[in-house]
Length: 436
Ligand code: URA
Image (tube, rainbow, N blue to C red; front, side, top):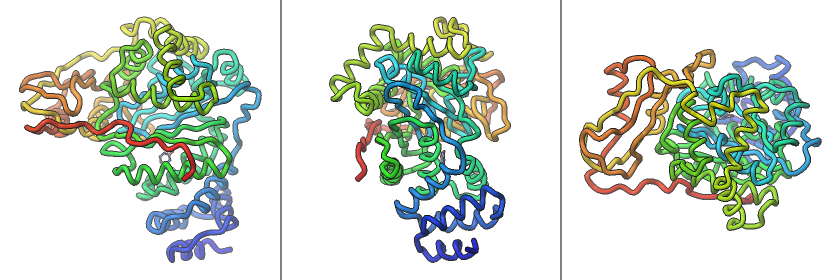
């Protein structure tokens, strides 16, 4: 087989066989196929796509490029969730303890943030001494003992994805549904959970700009899950405005703590409740939505969900006192209010622009090598649909340095107004619970 023929084949819009896909991934991982040929193929896939069968085979080949977590020593159903990434998305920090407090096992591997989106590991590392690296045996023991562990992804899993993603990132070939679906699902499947719940975001701060594209991505990932006989479901949610109010690591951790104590923002709480309900049903802990949401409400009102976060923190070496008293978490030097320049209904809070604004404060990374500042970020005081008068505080900016005129200009550019009242997007646009 010559790789150039595979590029020709995809360029002509034809489908690959399993052997051809295995040849590609094995050859690329061994270093037999150069980057420039794989970039050309990825670009052809961006234009011609891949059918569901090819996408599942690609995911399988990527999965087989490394080892898989063996979680068979964990008793009970192990649930995992994944978000395709957004601004202010601290869902794992609240949702994982909530479902773990209801009896589900969560053995989760998470990632770091890049660009305008944040990562769960960075948020957890806002806690002093919190360890995101663990021996496999300790990870399993922790989940057996307290139902919950969140660590960084092992480098042994899916090396093909690391190579391919690095290449796609610099060749404008990230935004292809089959490439995204196989990349995400290979990592989820390698992590070894029994069930997977996907939060596929659409809108101004997401990979998928439209609801239709997000649905297509969700269905593609669910069909990969079906290929591997894994219960895989999805919620499709809006990322036109940031989730909740806080953007930035410590600030988001505090918002997750508030949510675990029943004092979180409405939209974020709603998402955690919806996803938690589905996860408890996937784990067969609850048979219907009513029961699962009662269980989740109970876990919050009894304090058990917050206790779970503290237990995980203690097991992973973190300073539990900082969770009990979030004032002990790192603080920015300045908290600057941003007054509204106009009067009217807030029509848009551009999620991506606000994510980039937070990144420029130091909350995120422009490149993988960048160091982040856990304390800084943005706390919105209003969301889409709210009415504000000129001078009302739109947001508090937590920063270690003065805000430049350019930064303020870009912040205000992210906000649009309307004279007419505005109905915000429905946060949860759809749930998909079977392979359609
Ligand atoms: N996230 C991933 O893990 N992979 C992609 O291809 C895109 C987003």
